[in-house]
Image (cartoon, rainbow, N blue to C red; front, side, top):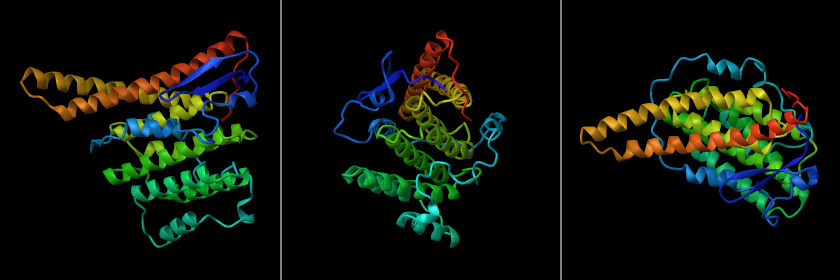
Length: 309
């Protein structure tokens, strides 16, 4: 495990890791904008990438997704390790009960339902003035996610299914980012294992040919940066494999756009898609570089990060 010697400071556009010898865990959690108990960076990320996303209808066959299931094949059905309160000792949240009933009735929620749940959870968390109330808001949100994740298909072949998975990843990212930067520091390693298990379920559902897949991996890489002292090699490998496919997509789009321009065709939407893909790649590459920077600093002091999962 990485030594707790670096702080993550949040600016309006990106995260910077600053190395400091005297930094302790309490200092790590004092970020800019102390008056706001939650983080906004992941919402800003969604806003920056919120343009309509075209999808490819031809999923690719690849063994790369075996990375996501090789070490935790039973993690999808296992009960979460993160509980601070035994689930049997309290009632499920209202939204969780609704989605459980829908599942039993064979009714599938929409991506808009996930968006609504995320807004409600964010509002409940922001409006809470006491720590216990914020803790309950997070627990209720995780209850909801546990029910929603049961609706994730093994292969999200339709655009609506992919949008649903993408929105669920945004919900997860908000939850674990809020937990990371709101003083819930007693079980950071368990929190990272839990978020990793959940993304292990989401990522294989969408093929690498879909832009939605890379958006989800980008969110995961952002969380890896925020939990950098807990991240493991396998998590970074997921991101690196995704980067390889993303670079191939960019190369193909660039070639097509170049051919179109040479033939006198001006495809504005294709150029926008290429710019979006490049933006995703740049952000993901930045996150990985910052994590590797921290790991290199650790290795230079002969301390090797411990693999958590």
